[in-house]
Length: 85
Image (cartoon, rainbow, N blue to C red; front, side):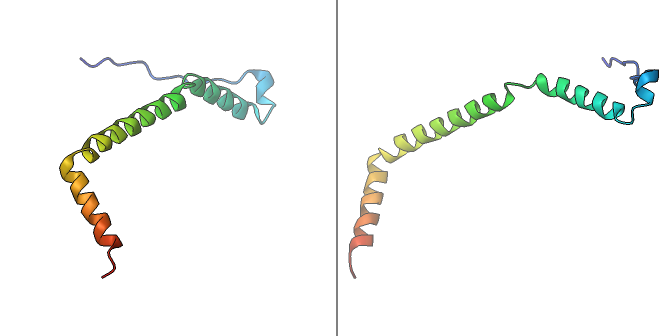
């Protein structure tokens, strides 16, 4: 179901603000600050998600590298690299 909202009305400057050429800039700045203030914890949450993904990936690598087959492949690789041929 589609809910239709009324169009936003443009903000009207008060008579005192009409004389100030920077009043529109100030209003826009205040509006931007109000929007951003609602996202205060966003960066921290993003870091937490990235950290948890890294920990999960590291755990997966540990499980894979502990396997006998992978250990044998890595041992052979190191032996071949250290053998002067």
